[in-house]
Length: 136
Image (cartoon, rainbow, N blue to C red):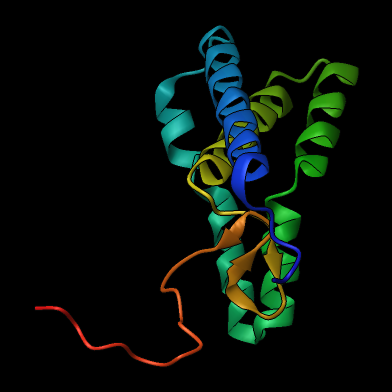
């Protein structure tokens, strides 16, 4: 295991992520910004996938930078400090994206490869025994 969480802890982390997603969407709905803006920028953090073109180590670093709540909090604090509705909307869309990803099980990445996350393996599970015959 690569430091991934399992069982009830994994479910709890995914439930927390769902709470973040719902809270961010509800707060965004009250912000007065249009849903077109939300839709346009919701997947923007996924541009970090391009980091994987430079290898798994760089890709994981880029993905984690774009999918950590640290950036969201800094953006939100800046939005409050400078009374910037654009920064606040950005923080809410960004938080919603991260919450959505984590709800689906897409956690922060390890440099071992895209499928290795702190929430467990994603994608095809490889059995150490090799390919197994199908029952069909």
